[in-house]
Amino acid sequence: MARDSEFQRERKKKQLRQSMVTNDKVRSAPVSWAEDHKRTVNVAGIVVAVLVLAVVLAWFVAERLWRYKTYEVSWRTDVSNASSAGYVSYGDGIVVMNKDGATYYDKKGTKVWSAPYDMSNPKANVKGDYLLIYDLKGKNFAICNKSGITGSGTTSQIITKGVIASTGVTVLQLEDQDASLISYYRNTGEELAVSIRNPLQIDGYPLDISVSPNGQQLAVSYYSISEGVGTSSISFYDFEKGKEAADRIVASFDYSENGAYVPKVVYLSDTKAFAVGDCCISFFDVSNRTAITRKDIAVEGEIQRIFYNNEYLGLVVRDEAKTGYQLHIYTSEGNENAVTEQDKLHTGYAFQQRNIVMYDADYCEVQSFSGRIRFAREFGNNLYTVIPGDKFKTYYLATMEELQQIKLR
Image (tube, rainbow, N blue to C red):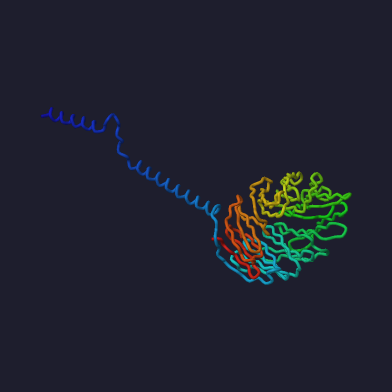
């Protein structure tokens, strides 16, 4: 009996061993709870990753590829003397300028402040939190921040151009019969003991001025005529680093080689500037303020429009065959970012992120940098100007009767 029992045990062991081996292949051992949990977590992680990827893809399509067909009006307000009003993007809202004063509306349409003044032709310049309003061909100016007017003043000569720094320092180009006069003012409107007065017969007539955001540097485009030949030049003044330099000029560039007429110069930042001529554009690296460098790019065709923000410069150029237009976009370093063919020349252009807003009196269009149309709408010859808001899909439309904030849908 003992042998039978032992025999039965050995037989059962053999059967058990055989059940674990079939066709020389080892069967998987039972999966532990920890391994099963790990596998579940891995599957859940993959599902979450797929969902995140889907959300990102949907956002990309909506932000970069989606074409919006309509819009909703977020708010509207009546504008008196709309046909003669001026509009400028400021802060997270917009400033409406008339001859007797300006009003700042925030992005919700709330009136933040009103600034009274007396100007026949008010123009504006914005840098950071500061806004300069000056009377072109007049003598009055006002300096504002987000709380309202910080200062104002009256010049002794006619104002031909005004710019402001992010510190509130204001620079005015004044008309003078025998010399070019450029004067500096505090944000209170008080005149500083800093000015540039150059005889017209020696340095030429100043076509444009631009002040750096920090207020320490100034770029001036001059045009002079000698023996019947006109020449443009750009001079950079530095009132901090250029104390030892003659007339505070740290760099000067002329265009005698290509004969370009250069009526536009702009500081994009404290380290980058550009100038636009009739046959070329120049990009200046001013990061080393006493060793400024210049990069020229030839322009083939006639420049029709110039627009820019802190990152990009846009040019609309009529092609040499005069059958259409090209829209060129450059980075602040002077690299061409994009170029697209355009059938029509519009009245106004503006950047909004990586999109371009184009408008006429009866039409508004938004294109991506690649030329894809994001929005297009006719407005029945009632559109005065279009100004991009601080976020994509938000715009300010000024008609002859009112100011609206719209959002694309």
